Length: 553
Figure 1: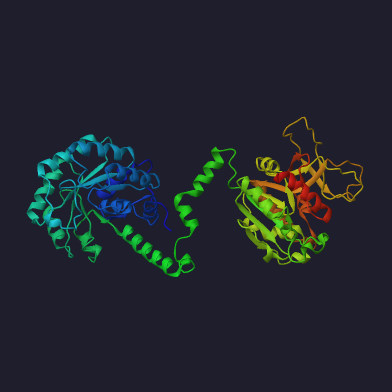
Figure 2 (figure 1 turned 90 degrees about the vertical axis):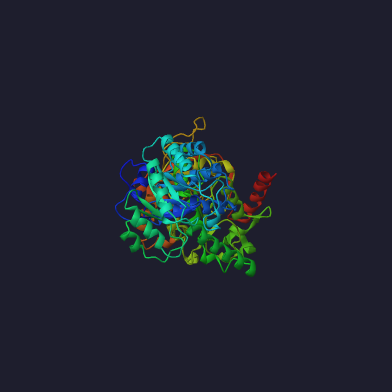
């Protein structure tokens, strides 16, 4: 795909168009009829765009007889100009009226950054030149010269271009009349002359060119004499060639084939691989730029946050409930655990969700997620599952266990953290109940509930046996990690180092977090006070029913 055309620093679009028209070499511009086609023209490498009257009227579904108003045309041009950096030359028909309409048109085009306008010497309302052109009356020469002069007097930018289109040959007049009109229009201030012909050979154009003798730049539209080699135009010292209607025509043909195939097959499988992807449409629309702007200007924006959910385990302590499904698919209050967690994410604007499955992965039936399978789930732990998703990591994500039930505010508060790495610690957990409590969190400061958002760093995560050194834990890590900006790089680097260890397959997320801490990474703590639980046993399932009944009521 071609890069955008580069122009001299601070060159305006009218100046860029003028440079094309006055170029010492043959230049080309291509038709576009809306914003997305204009962007495609620029990305193809063209230096300018022809906003064709035929194509613009066609995309509105009306005839090329001035049935689309000039204000509708200008509105579409604004979209085309906004999405591109190359200049646009508008096919302005007859100027949409008399000299006064022309003056207003020029001012409105300049306001929208349009490079110039081409007007033709026919009577308003016009008819397309290839529909009975010989029966179409030409405008009075003096009246058309006044229209050109009015346009030039109205422009604020000296580089704005007005191209006068001579229709004498289309209307059946001879070369002498075409030359007479072209000279009059040049004298009235036209920046270039577009000489038009409907013959399949360029004979009229070349005869006109010879007699014109470079008095002003010449523009042509070889729609009918398309087989003529462009070297002929170069030799004749034509300034600009307009490929005038080929984008709209190719689009129509493609849409007709697609529509017929879908109607015939009553399916999409035959056409999906033949058409542009949805992601390509998003790219052409500038979705990435909007996302970057939202991150910069909208501090609470979270639509690009990603979730990675670890759901590879069977759940061996749940008896026969997991004979045919992983524990994340066990229904709680009629809704699978994973479905509940995915819904929590989506309500917080997290739509990019990757689930790492393992045991009975085919039984995971939850919409709105991407599933990656850890094929070694039976012999590996959580960290190996997380490593399976490493290629999907982003600079803004949350990693969590798939068996969590939690109140929505916990996820909301976590994703609003600006820390590169942040974990959720429940300070209300009874860590002195005598059981082998897992994932005890030891922090730089205990939870001070009188302070909101206190700056606390994690020191380590350990189970009850490992923590028997006299230090009192500050809570329990609940199985959620927030990763942002540099945190992604730290995470990826840590996983790759740990993958070299012989015991990598037995490592869990606490091991990853402790490694990050030992490597000097700052892991912040977000304290909560209950309002969550995980499901690891039949007793947990009973509590989960009560928890969700309260939430669902």
